[in-house]
Amino acid sequence: MSTVAVPHSSFLHSQLKPAELRVVQVLEIGLAITAPLWLYALFFPDGYDYGRGLILGLVLICANMVLVLKVSKVDLCAHRVMPVAYLAKLAAAGAYIYMVQHLFQGSDLIGYQDAGTQNAADFLVTHQWWRSGVGTNTDFMISVVTGLYIITGPCLALGITLFATLAFWGEYLIYRACCVSLKTVNRGRAALLLMLFPSIVFWSASLGKEALMYFAIGLAAYGVARLTRSPSPIAFLSLGTGFALAAVVRPHVAALLAVAITATYFFTKNANGAAGIVIKIFSLPLLAYGSWFSFHQATQFLKAESVSAGFKVIHKLGQDTAYGGSMTAANESLSSRLVQAPFLLFRPFPWEVHNMQAAVASLEGVLLFWLLWSWRRDFLSGVRRIRSDATVLFSIIYCLFYSVMLASALSNIGLIARQRVLMAPFALMLFCTRSEGKGGLASRWFQSASAAAQGTRRPPPLRARVRAG
Image 1 (tube, rainbow, N blue to C red):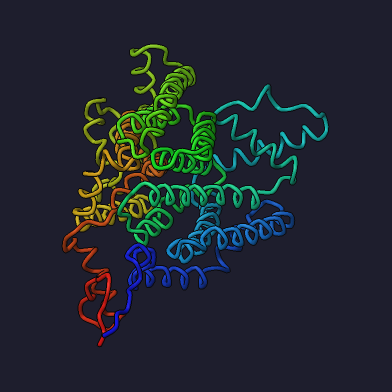
Image 2 (image 1 turned 30 degrees about the vertical axis):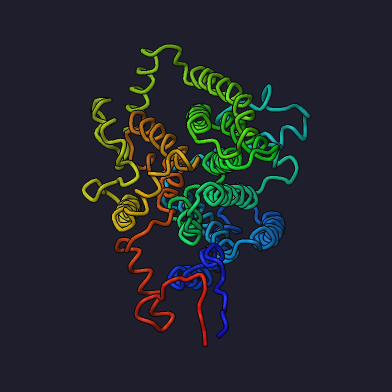
C-alpha cells in the first residue's frame, strides 16, 4: 500500500479553474483578432504625429511585458492573467482615443495633451516653468504631461500608453493587496475581477486623473494590507507614496483614503503580537494627523471652510453636472441622492438608458448584480471577516464614503460611471473569498464548466492525500 500526496490546497487554489481559463482564452482570441484595429487607433491617432510614439510606445510595452512575466512567476493565476490584462488595457486605450476623437464631445485627455505640448515647447525656449510649483488636481496633471513631453517630446500615443501602464500596475497592486490580506482568497476570481472588469479596464486607460488615481489607490491598498499583516518599510513607503499621489491628483479622494486607512488600522485585530502593538501605537498618531491634514487640504481645494459652505459646494456641483443625455434629475434633493448611494455600482438602471454608452454601462450593472446574487455566500463570508481581514474593512469604509460623495455631488450618470471605477475594485474584492457551501449560480456554472472540461459531471472532492493500492 502506497500513498500519493496531492498538491497543497493553496497551490491548487493558485491555479485558474478550467472555466476561468476559458474566459482568459476567449479574451486572448478577441484581442488577437482585433489587434490591428486597436493598435492603429493607439499609435496613429488622427491629427497627431506618430513616429516618436510608435517607437517609444513599443519599447515601453515590450519592457513592461518582460516585467510582467518576471513579477508574476510566483503566482500561477497572475502569470496567466496579467499579460492578457495588459493587452486589454492597451486595447482600451486605443478605443478610448478613437471614441474621444469621433464620439465624445470633448475630453480632458485633449486638454492635457494640448496644454502639455504648449508648455513643453515654451520651456525649451524660455527655460521657465509654466507655473509656480507643480500644483494640484488639473494643474498637477498638466505639470506631469509637460514634464514628460520636455523629456520625450510631445506624443499622444506615448502619453496614453504610459498612463495606461501605470493604471495596470495599480490593478496588480490591488490584486496583491487582496491576496495578502484575505485569508481565504479565490485567486482566479480575484485576478479576473480586479484586472479584467470592463469599466476598470476602460476608464483608467487614458491620459487622465483616473489612471494616476488608480495607481495611487493601488499603492495605498497594498500598503494597508502589508501594514496589518507584516509591517515593514515597504508597507509604509507604499502607503505614503499612494496617499501623497492621491493628495495632489484629487485631494478630496485622498481625504477619504486617509480616513478609511486610519479606521482600518485602528479597528483591525492585531496579528503581529507585541511588536504589532508597538508599531500600531506609534503609527496611529501619524495616520490620524494625515487624516486631519488631508481633510484640511480638501476643504481648501473645495473652498468649503464650513458645513454650510460644504453643502453649497455640493449643491453647485450637482447643478453643474446636470447636463447632456446622461443627466439624472437635476432638482433632486440631497437626501434623495444619498438614498440612492448604495446603488451607484449598478447604475444606470435599464430605464435610465438614453444612449448606447449608457446601455453598455447598464449591462455591466446587470452583470454585477448577477454576480452579487450568485456569489452572495462568498460576499457575506467576506463581510463577516471585517475585523480579521484589513482589506475587507478598508473596502467597506472606503466604498461607503466614496458612494456617498459621488451620489451627493454628481447628477450625471456618465460622470458617475467614469469616477466610480475608483470604488469598483474594493467592492469587487468582497466577492473574492472562498466560503463553504454549494455557492450560487455563477459558482455552479464555473464548477460545471470546469467538470465538463475535465471530462467529469461533477468535480472530485479535494483531499489532502489519496491512497492507491
